[in-house]
Length: 236
Length: 270
Image 1 (cartoon, each protein chain N blue to C red):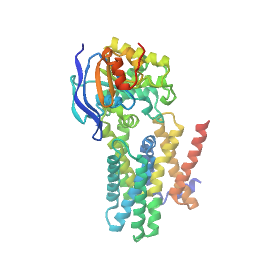
Image 2: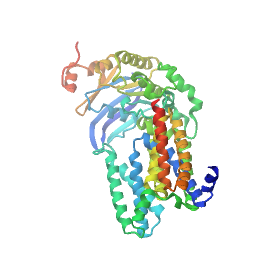
Image 3: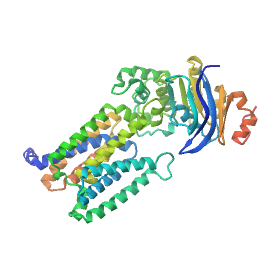
Image 4: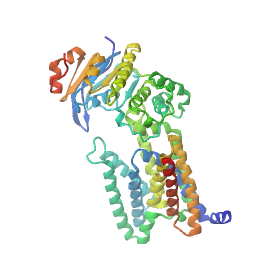
């Protein structure tokens, strides 16, 4: 069991005063690989946004146990506007802006951005426009942008949706490797329950305003799946 | 031709129009790239009309035109931010349309009762670049040059916030500040340029050069450069042709922008 990094204590999440997720209690520990699952509209992205610090809680406390916790965030690919004429390298460089600071050029750190692209397997596409890349390549560019900031926690929102099976596998292999070899804490939102269940050790399951979390074996029981998804899922 | 070119710009009112239009064109073509990319081009004409309303009210009551048009534009931006926070019940674009219509209606009412009457309505829409004074140029330079500097120095923060505010925020960037900087500067530029050049010219310079640039460039950096390269000759030649052929200058400049747009479309299709 790793040290707790981030903790939700009776947190209420929502927008404009309207509660979507009441009373969330959650502990994220160092080196966790957590899958956040649930039916559409259950509040998976809302929870991830709160973990990322983008959404402030309506009530309750989010405790960050580690000072200056570096968070890497990979948003849903479909939310990004592809009309921006930005290259893969320019987008990866955005992950360095905090480190670079105000009034300083990112040029000095460009090697790090190239290295991040190499790590995710995208060497040689630095100068290509983001909009001209394939779905899988775009996803990797966004992942490289998160990795270049050297995060301790990596948050990913539906990173494998719309990818073909081979790209899904390659992405999940890579995330497992980051988790095992670098000890990076990973939280992944997906509605592809089977893919997530294969890799994650812990599961946070959402549905009907309820949030339960725990070990994969406890959470993904047929009873719980029926409760949260309404229909029996899984084969075994 | 050179002789008549030199002659055209030997007149102080032509030189004032040139410097004024260049200042308005240059700053608009820079921030306009973000306005177009953020899909808020319609905000340009909405705010320009609000600024024009400020001028109309100030004219009617004998108040300071710069102050009132800027105040109304900033209040309008604040209203938009408050009204569209969280989940939108109606699209932001529609609200901008409503603001535009109200501002236009009120401008017409105030201007129809002002001393200038119908001429005032025409001037608020189409402006009069030839009426720009030296003092106006100085004021534009004092306001616009620091804004240009902000966009040069904080380009990476403004770009990241514009492209992907959520991730930038999660990764430690103060996106609220950079969003504020963007909208505040857009408000100032529109308020000042509309007061001097009218709704039509300020909106056109904010949208057309960046549109041409984005159509024909393959990087954000070159978009700014192309936007400037389209603006500067259009302003110079537009003023010159308006002088020798006796056309309204703002109409001539925008007509030249249209020629650039056709060229860019042809290049983009190749």
